[in-house]
Length: 391
Image 1: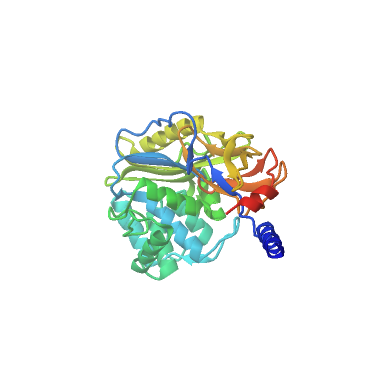
Image 2: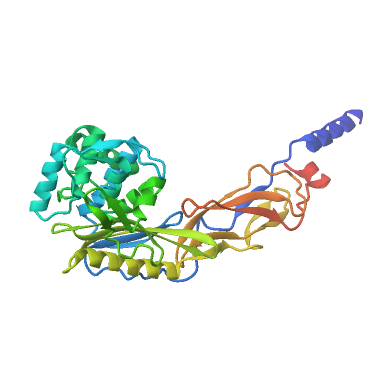
């Protein structure tokens, strides 16, 4: 009898002292949540190609030919990006002086003869880095593109290699450059690639400052006006127009508006617009896309406060719903699918009412949207009977 009692006591002790398996969080949300409503239908151009993206949220779509196409003066965005990466310039600073070379003069004369865009320069003249960038991005200065490329890399060929290296680093898989100005039709890209380039360039404060200028005053040239005639309207804050016979009218643009107290930035590109005034056509098409896109963008809730997003199930039979304790507010539009991730980590055997049990992350892009998850009812630990009778 004594042996039996000892064995029973040992069994009870072992059962009561055995580690209790942790409760398990079981999500009821899918891996992605689709915002209610139909995806916006934007007024895409009837010809060429176009795309629009919302920074931090993703693509609103694209239309037209997806093949790489000549981009004309939009290549100068990459020229400015490379120069500013190699020679950073604080906003408002003039930067070093760049002497006008014989090659620049020859290029200016050749472009003038071919009725191409050039900023008047003269031998022996110097431009500051800021003036040269203004002549590149505000004035349609193909000759200034050559001047900057030679200054940065000692030769046009070496600078073009830098442009293509930067394109690979940014992830522009459908882009190739053959010259700094885009005058060569071999400089090609797609709207989606140009959007990525535009976002990278606009992250540089001096670039962003220059492309927002409606006009600049340059030596010899005097006052030169930005060909983006919608600049400052409908939220448009830049970036660059370009047009020639091979590319048609092109416009890489950025626009900002405040939506429900949140600043929203659009970046888009329109390529291949043909008309009597291709530059005007490209800007007009972009403006129509901007107006329509902002009409559909809102701050939305993919997950509402109090919404059940899963349950905590315990091996001893307890099951408690898990709810979102705060709203997940994000910039988006109807029909947008956003990935969600639920993370609960390790859970104790007993959890008090209202305790934080995890975090829900909504990841539409670069927006950091997090929701704390809690339980409204306590999770009781296992009973003594369950501990004694479990296998």
